Image (spheres, one colour):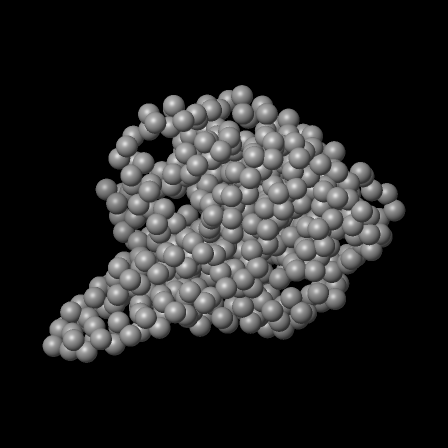
Length: 510
């Protein structure tokens, strides 16, 4: 009974109840106009035809085009209205405008290491993608300061706490999910509150949808009382809006401009295996120092100031841009991706590394929802003699995503891609390693949401020693996995395979 009452009076229940009420009003309103049904049907048929022509000529993924064409054709009235609702979001346009202003404000402060970028241009493995990131995503290359890899979320978390305890100037945090009922948040809140009292500036940003069900109504007041500056990206409002479709999926921690973290973990106990929701939770992340920290600082400040934009701030207080005389081997390129520029940076980086690989490509991802270009790149890599292996969860957090991922197995396995499921539990790591030379680690899943709809971040590593640590972790993880062959795939439940195929027709919208 207590759980039921708690659910009924929660932010999530009230918000979704009001959203569903609005949809019901629209449906009732439509059927209330039955005497005008012929006129409405004619008008919506013309509108649907116009939208189909418009969609065919849009510059975007063919999968998105096909999905929208199916929706508009099969549901001619509501499909057209849904298309207008999803595509013509005025609030989303406002975010895009604010973000462009912030990027223009902050661009002059982002340091560019000419020596590092010149050196990267000599490496065949990353020359092209480094040039692309620098010129298309404002993401220059930096010499490796000191990259440290963590093969489990709990190890990354302990290092994060130690660095926050040592903060002297500022702590910036950006997460997708915050669960305030766990011990992880309790420990972090204690550290952050104490650092504020010591004079450290703390900024804390989280996503409105990701944290809707796991933060109390008074959460902002709690942060205010502790002196923690905070912002919610795309705070969920009980009004129909496409604003809620683009989420801030990034995980960034920057401390004093000297050290930064990114990876898969959010602030919830399952990410550090203090509770077991889907078996053992396998995550990872990295800690970086050196000039590359400035780029992650800039990514945080871009998002921070995009929300409730009030004009430029004194960015030089946080973007240190200092000279580093000593550095480790290799190069580091932190980059961000956003859904507003029609440039799929995250997918482009993955595709480039797959297409350039000579020996192997090893991937860990919690979700596998591929467009045709990615599917063909993986299959072509195998045909070129590249060893392609992919690890996904055996215990999913979203069962429909699990069914959907399985629809790609026959095409991949028959092409020679080796597919594995992590039998101890849930894989949440997002990594790609190629040829012992290059790797990507960050927040970008192999799915449509990460590639097209979310704000994401990652780090491209080239010739950095920890790439060998990442490959070792991949191989050790693989030993805990079950390989899914075609013989094993045929044993899967026929009904769930059918459901997965049905869901695949709408995959770009999920």
